[in-house]
Image 1 (cartoon, rainbow, N blue to C red):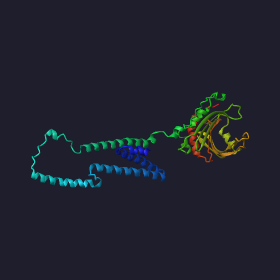
Image 2: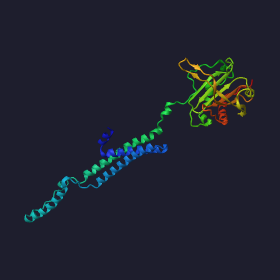
Image 3: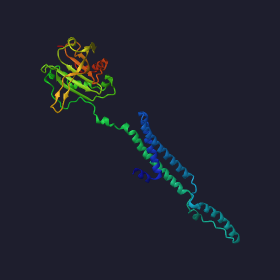
Image 4: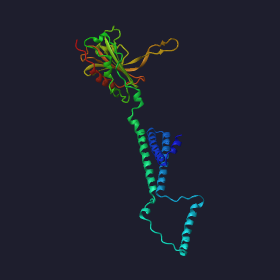
Length: 359
């Protein structure tokens, strides 16, 4: 159907249209074939460019035929007979003039002589119309080709529109536990999440091309404290790593925390200083819980060890008088970022957590 409609178009519209469309698509497909090293795309682009070359050749031949018209040869040798008849007719006219002299023809009046049309005027007008059609078609479909070529650069991609950026805002706005109303007030989970969810967080982790898939903050309390110790928490998920940051407002100092690690399963324990505060690195396994949602009513399997996690615990004040902030990173593959990445995150997050005043 499309080919039939194209054949209905005039020659000087159809051929420039084919040239522009085939050239644009051919060059575009060849560019993609080179960048992606796709042989099928390269063959398809070559076909488009071949059709464009054939159309260019047809237009050039048509223009040459208009500039140098040649006498058309009719069927059955009619042209040859007409030439022979033209040669015999002057000879007969000369013999008749010798026998019967004819008066000389009178010159035509100037007005009458000018009534005839000048040869070549119609052909020139047709040439101008043909050129106008060709230029108009090339301009129109050239603009369409430019839109098809440059459109993806200026139009937002479907992936960007389909996946909104991760946000820490909580639409429920639930009231935090009463311990969060004490003076000085602890940082909330949403505030902690906003402190962690930085534009350069993926770069600090060593994966600059990734974007956060989810972000959340919660106003929790420490377990086994009857809701008397605030423990806000924030979690940021990436494709490679997961970052969990919490602040525990208890009386446990980093020095005491390090002594407790000697009795636990933590490994690679290393004490450092972060912004003048006591801090310690440790490595432990995450917990892995399997839940069966089958037809038997569902059952949970035993708690097992998950992938390794690397944690940096930093005191909430320079005097290490109690309370700490923990920055934990892990991945499903078991890979861990460098300790420098956790130090960089702590350098960005700690200024957002007010220091605990002296008691």
